[in-house]
Length: 295
Image 1 (cartoon, helix red, strand yellow):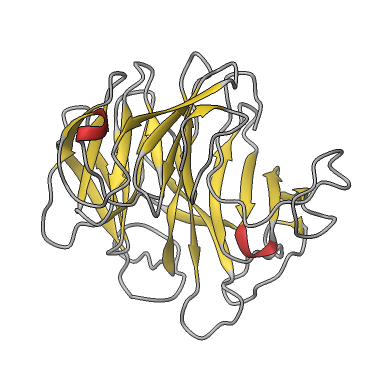
Image 2 (cartoon, one colour):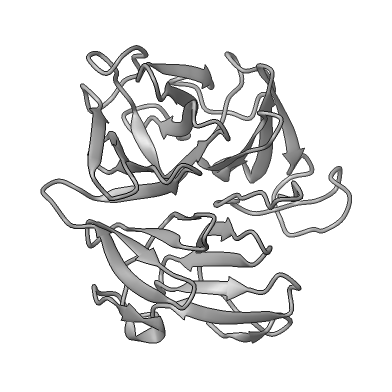
């Protein structure tokens, strides 16, 4: 863990990513809970909030203490929403690093993901297999909860069943019509098979759009038969395509028009820069697109 020039900066276990309108990149870290800023020119790294210890203290900059977060998101004003999982809260962090509580702790509330929409609505995925909508004032609008601890049943909120919702993993389209998230099967099926689902935010109907419930793999092609191994991140582009971190396959995949393809990692696992045909990565997690479409 080291701030300063980008060439010498160090990270421990980066999990979440978001980008502001100026192109500054913000990261969250799991083992040493902080939010850090990479300047848009990629020259400098600094700590915005948190001090690497684990706890629950609001405040400014390194006076604040956070718990680990898999996910962060950012609004048009540069306010970061932090899924403070162990503390069972959603925190807000402004441009100056001031940390405040946006959604307080309550029974059985442990947020995996806090995804802000352009409208100011906040969508929260919870450890209790739930998805909730809060308005810009932090008032709960609705909550959908799985009707079983395992399985995959699409439909409206009265019947829907999710397998385990994946940590820190949701994306919303520009029109706020759909929320996309992933699930994985932790009960019996080997290899952490994953599926991608979407919720129509008007009708609250959930639909599976890619992946096979009990089959893990790395098969590209039609979305209904494509396979994944623990999806860990997603980002939607302006054309409606979805980039997917396929964690246990060490790949980044792409879903558009019902077809899944591999973007990065076809050459195997590792750490190799260069052309996409030879590039290698190891366990991709958070994904974000900047305003220019760079991933």
